Image 1 (spheres, one colour):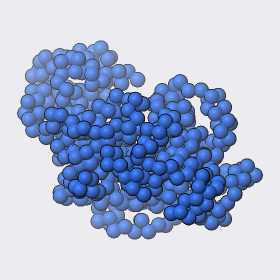
Image 2 (cartoon, helix red, strand yellow):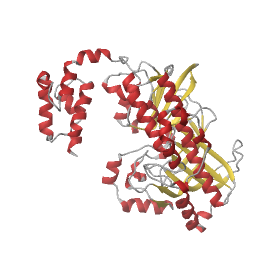
Image 3 (tube, rainbow, N blue to C red):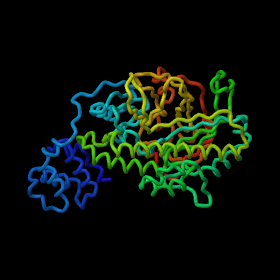
Image 4 (tube, rainbow, N blue to C red):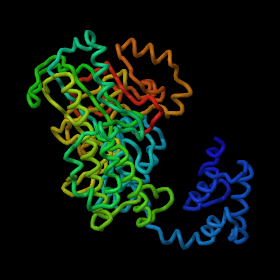
Length: 473
């Protein structure tokens, strides 16, 4: 834990400029090299005061060289605009300062056209989770996120909700047999299923994707860790929905949340590194490095991102079909939407690239799903196409506390009482996913009433999540 006690503010307090030298120092500190915290800070100060003396030092020579070449390096960077463009924040009082600060930096990018922050927002890498950013012909890999194309999918079955009580053991068996969870987990060769997505020519044309094809096949139809889930629950329509052709009433539903697994994570890491090598931004903005869509690299990432999105959709399709067949159910309706993606859209008459990192598309009439937590309702919504939000809404309730804080402070007894009160059977998951670690979904929905209309509500009743501490979300 001691390695983490030196942060960027500590380095700046020594007299370092808030630029790339801070990042180099933090990278050195991450290995500690046998120094205590006090000793390491003293070394950083000594290097700053006399960098020439450390040009041959095995540990600090890179930092020393960067300090000596500081002005030239800073002059070579793509400058940010002096002032950020204005952007709308929904539910601002419940959003942490770090997320707002990240959004202000994103709004200074020379390619930025517009932005918005959703009410479930919290700090992430580059663009905050819950951040929406429209750019001019540029795509930001960390503006899309690591779990590319992560999505929600809801199947509404022609089965009575009474099964949740009368056939609980059967439903548990169905979930346990036909889903698999955890970072890195997948299926053995004899268990794998085929899908047309694996026939995409990009798996032959792109060497990175070619190297990932077998992993993609192994993990097809599985879910990651963290906040990914498969749930049986009650879908309630308070009035008939003409467009879905579903009558008022309650229905058995299956709700899933997961993304593009190892395929998406590897694509994200590769193209983020590539973007950083081509698009040199100031230290505070380096995780917002972008690729020009007119470049070969930009087009390569765009195609890979779309394939990862298709793959994530295929994973949900496999899960839902396996479970539907196991239930012997008819499908009344299926709704699906994704986040952690970039789209070509029109905004105020201009074609832009819209990044929705942990944000739900909410164009006028477009259906989406906004989940709460394992013990609070989710919502089937229809977008209103609000210009200020760049036709977006939240992708969930949003975290109220970090995973570490949740594990350290929340009580298992409190969680069990809450699950019992709500009639929820939990299959897996750790305290980091306890409902108390999330914002109040009703307050989040109230903060975006101008962005979506509620079509139906989903009450989770049987929830499966990873129980191995995986955080692939």
